Amino acid sequence: MFNKTVKELSLGLAQGEFSSVELTQHYLDRIKEKDSAINSFITVTEENALNEAKAADKSRAEGKASDWTGIPFAHKDIFCTEGVKTTCGSKMLDNFIAPYDATIVSNFKTAGAVCLGKTNMDEFAMGSSNETSYFGKVINPWSDKEQLVPGGSSGGSAAAVAARLTPIATATDTGGSIRQPASLCGLTGLKPTYGRVSRYGMIAFASSLDQAGPMARTAEDAAMMLNLMAGHDAKDSTSIIKDVPDYTANLNNTIDGLRIGLPKEFFNEHLSPELQSILQDSIKQLESQGATFKEISLPHSHLSVPAYYVIAPAECSANLSRFDGVRYGYRCEDPKDLMDLYQRSRTEGFGDEVKRRILIGAYALSAGYYDAYYNKAQQVRRLIKNDFVSAFEDIDVILSPTSPSPAFGFDSKGDDPVKMYLEDIFTISTNLAGLPGMSLPAGLINGLPIGMQLIGNYFEESKLLNVAHRFQTATDWHTLAPKNI
Amino acid sequence: MSIGPDDINQIAHLARLKIDENDIPKLSDDLGNILSLVDQLQAVNTDDIIPMAHPMDAVQILRKDEVTETDNREKYQKVAPNTEDGLYLVPKVIE
Image (tube, rainbow over all chains, first blue to last red; front, top):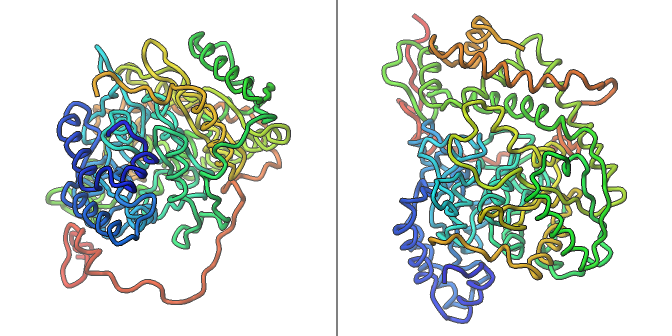
């Protein structure tokens, strides 16, 4: 049962093969049995889940079921869930019971889906290895002899889906946090166009870059999820007023004649021969379906990581100033005065990487540096966007690597933060430009999955999902599962 | 690009963080490395480029001036570390 996709589970429920209570119990049992070795969940909401499953079975009996009624899933612990602990992977929010639901949390509830719990993540979504979580590291279920990272920051969502502890999970992506863990765990993940999905109730990291999206095994499931998640929300002023298409409608469209661009800056001499060969095979596969390829140039792409490491920390330092030990979250013991209350609550409540980014951001925004750093980075950001805009004049989709390598060992990047930052070198420019990007399994390197990235023009998620689905119809990389599940 | 102990203490103060004296050398290196990475930006000519705040250059939409939120004070204060009579309690600010 645990190898079924949402599409298949939905059919099974509709045909009465199993009830939602049985299905939910099946996943809860798997979590109990297997998650102690993976640590992909911070909170398992067993009682809530079984109540939601009972309610789903009841609606079905009354003839009121939708595709999602009774389907179990998990939320990344960055989304506020009313009455349920919402930690964002931080000690700062270890005691935080959210008083309201994020918009996408309401969307899943309204559709009748069953939330199994909240998944682990890098603290405040800052990390590419899930090592910065206050609740301990997440182990990639593909690990064999050596323990490997699942990627981050949505590492818990990715590990839980890869280990078949949930069929799908929600995730968020600020610089690659959906696509890089999808690549490292053999999954299909999509970061939508900025403004496509509401950020209301999603704990903010870098507000001009953050976007929520699906973590699934197939493009078809990702499309079903995006149908639930996308849309304008009056509670998020950055969300865009634009009709939401049915993302499952065009999955099977032909890709004959589709023009795909290959950025020469990403296919460079630093790419490993193994990854080169996997990407070439994927290109050949899509060519055999009629897609055409041409080299394109994104001349400012080498500036993505530098621009990101000004913009993201600057916005994070502003966003995280709300954690003051006064209104919610962690408060230090016996503060002697107000300054001591602020300083010690923040110093004791935040982990090292979060503090490092707050400091960088505070520096970049401080008097005398704002123009040299933040303003400059926002100007470079427009140059990066303009590169994509010109590229999309002649092509429909871009294909590139997602991550430079498959899953790596813990602590393998040493203690130089810059090394870890380069993990997101292929994904960050998409966030800066606000474009949709996805990662899907493309092959194995030393027995470990690795993804390829597809980048689309604004609001062309359907086209990405179409290409991904056609690829998955002809290949079986997305069906591979870790050995010990 | 280096960032000395005085700079670190100054930005830590701005960010309301306390930095342990022993952590300053390592932090100084880390921040210096990040700033060196970031300094690649300075080489780019960005004359006349308008800084980009939103990918679609969207502007704030104003809603009608109507009451949409109800009073949720009790609910929201349940998660506060310390409250009394509907107020948030902090150490004494004015003597």
